[in-house]
Image (cartoon, one colour):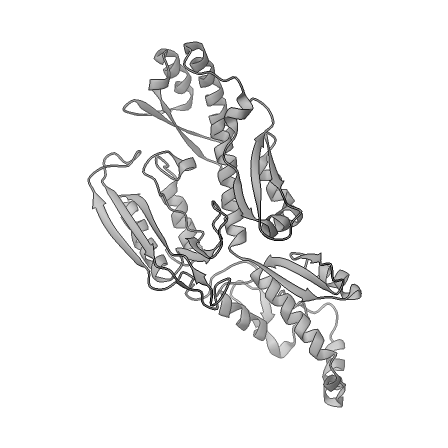
Length: 415
């Protein structure tokens, strides 16, 4: 995933008695003045340095008491699915280390349980870790978790000791967790990889069944084994691709025709690189509405424009086969989002409308904030649900947001 590298912070001069020193410090960061506040842009390191310098000014003014810097930097923990966090801990340790950096530790409690939820907290390592930095660490983690969890599957499969190690080697992206019953295990990973595993086990099972001893099947098997080992393997089923079954996509990746057909039924993207083929349809429940109104009031950073207000409504319903728990009830949702009424803002509105029509805005799953299951939740197209507060509070000012959301939509074929 792409991590946030450009940060926008808002500094209100009302909190600083010595405005002269305030302006002197901010002058090193090319601030943008907006009434009584200043907008500062830069890298994480630059913004952190800026806030360290400003903290000294606030302390001298007597308006800031900081008896416990670590306590001030703490943010609310996040409650997430235990099985997803187990997968992240085992398979995504590098990504997790990149998110937390050197100044924070991402800690997980009650991870020993293989069901339910786990609390994830963000603990600063020293006094340099400020609250603004803590918020960005939390947001980086939530973004990473949401994108990963949206495509995560967990299944129970039957295993034998001799094929357990073999399967781990063939499917390195999957996490295998043996259960108390030695012949069974949980497997967790991306949907397409779990589907490939199930297809592989089904193939092996049918290959070893008595009817496979028929001479005609034996001939087919011998032909298959005569294929040189250097021939290309299908990334989905991990078997050598027969010449008559090979299909090459425009992105130059090859698959078995049957495997690719099954993968495209789930999502029309290349299972290897994610290149889009056709129109991507999501799992957003049907029957929802997207209403748009406009206001003359402006958003921070877009003072010369009005505001576009989007109101989404998805009613309660019953989950279908594309949802996590078919035939179970799900709880609907009502959400509002905001865009500047500028030419670029109106362009994003048109793109979001197309995404809504393609059922890509919402999905059914687990809430990352409450931990409750069977709810309509945001998918991985980010929205501004607040008019103020900046990026950490899903609001404005955020000069990079319109560009970022267009890239998210483009990855889904909407541009």
